[in-house]
Length: 352
Image (cartoon, rainbow, N blue to C red; front, side, top):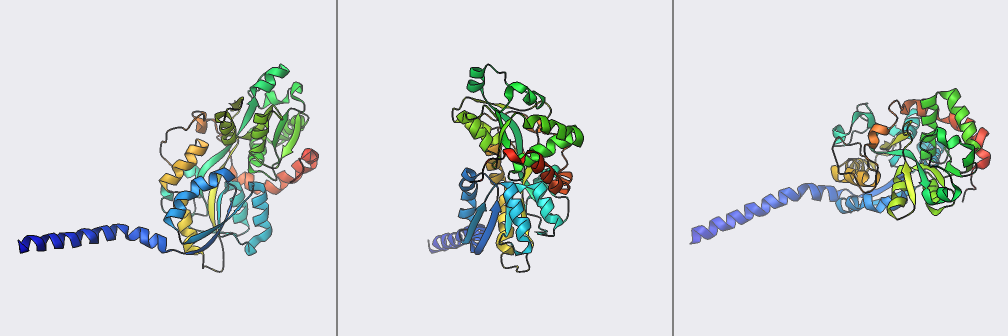
């Protein structure tokens, strides 16, 4: 009897030891502490959804989230340069990160699990300078009820938007303020060629009511009936439809402009935040987090099939413009924005 009790005691000790060993990674992770400043362009309502698992996994890391649209965030980082308070950039356009890298602002770090990301959506350097989570894509949000009142057809292509009957009825994002605006302009210039692209925008400008400083705002304005047509981020258009607004999400037949929502670590002389920054970048591409990106955007950079969420259009990756060159977009960013502003900036909405 004593021998049996002894074996049971030994077994219990071994079991507790095994459990303790299984918990070791969690204890090590939660032991990482400090303050981390994150610059992000992720839609505000998605931040708590995404960050819930990070806060559980790393309770001793205090996050300072600085959020704005991609264009403003990019300008802020370029202006701050090496004096930026940012430790990590999360969910900002890859073309913007390439512009930052050109200025020497990004540190090399290859997150754990980055090998599972499709090649088109991550840096090919070793170590990597950036990794992608999802893609932001441009669609056309149409308020079907408002167009019906006006007796107007639903536009199916970019060319359709030039119809004089839509004069003053279209709203789109300002490319200097909004990543969605810039990826849209960039797509037109690459799809059509620069001369035809600028000519197209000259004609479209006649039908534009205003240029917003947010990529999601045109979809919301269309949903509210303020303007019947919004060139906007697809995610928001789907969201408006699922909330019951009388909108349709049109994916232009010519192809979708897109950019990668990507992450990177900021180059700093002070390495105090590096451990926490690397933990954040590892977490940001974990499969369960990638699934959340997919649920919100209908697309993930991960080489894995997920079940398409809600009303999101099927096969959207096949409709993304195939020849999209993010390096060209980054290289020509300043020139494009300067010319765009000189041509069309008078219709920009007032900044709040």
